[in-house]
Image 1 (cartoon, rainbow, N blue to C red):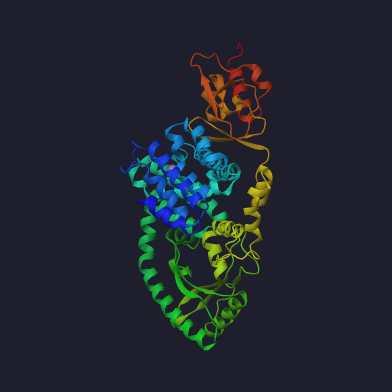
Image 2 (image 1 turned 180 degrees about the vertical axis):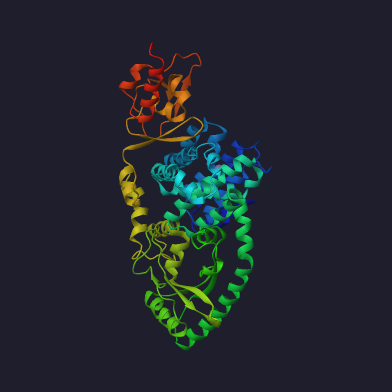
Length: 502
Ligand code: MN
């Protein structure tokens, strides 16, 4: 039973009361999902259980795990929210609500269709950059509590692992979203391992041909490079021992297939130009040891000019730290070597999650956590502090260092499609953003389920339902007084010009 595994795991760091709430959440969700099945045919409850289990593996707190178990109950029964609030309290309720809200953020239906015609990946990227970037920002802006994103990530990971059970068109949409929205956010939050998993799971669905080609291209190269890495590893161990230098461990890491493909595009598809297909990773105790090991490596193997990168002194924007160098290794084969401390290593693999985990334990006086020292990760610190200090959405985004368009709002259709509009936009602007015909035949609207006026200003996160009337006589001149998008304005004028007696 997965629930027993979860309870066994959480027993190691949560008290009895917390465990009881998790168990209660399980029984609650189990009841709601009783007769439901997933696309894969298994009982629905398997899904929230797997999501919760992943979060328990990462030692996240009780409200996060309870909310993970409850995260899809609202979809089965919209009335359930009140019971969740009553039974589990405000904190868990807000986490569940946050996840439900994020679930409404979807890439526009069929957005990929016209772009399938563009063979060139770069063209395609440029074309949707804006839409996708809006979605990413939206996702971050809407989750005031970083734990909401962590639940959503776990949810997405399990959905990707079980994607086979879905219809092909749904598969493609979910894989696209994962690749374009979730993986980049995981990257921005420093969660390297999760980013890699999400990308690798999406790759074969989104780019099946390229996936197969990369697999074929990489196959032999991987094997060869792995042999070189193994040889280099044994030599380094010997040299470090001779020099009396301690290390935690040395390992070869394979570049994952999706990032290999992306890199190949920048290197004329020439696999021989990719030096970090298999990189050797040396994890040591202290920063001094990092530089010491770098010196020893350079004394042994000649480094390539211009390939030494000091991300310890100058971390990457997402907080990543390491020393990178590329050398002429054993038998003159070129190989990349990465040197980092254990804290940097956990920081690079788990990012915000590792940090969050750390600060949680700190507050509960369990100082035994082995990773993430605070000193070098101010960036992540700021991030984790938001939820305590800053509830203001703009402050939150400043902390993330995003160039969020303050003057833009995000509005949903009831189906969850998102449109990004200028502040002050009206339902008419929204209608024309959906489709010219929807604008032309617009008769009325509901905002968040309530009948509203067509000249009302929309707010960020509003769900707008536009009513159309096929017998409509077209846009009203009056609308020009309050629309703010040039699209709506020109469409209305256009119509009025063609129908002057309106
Ligand atoms: Mn789910």
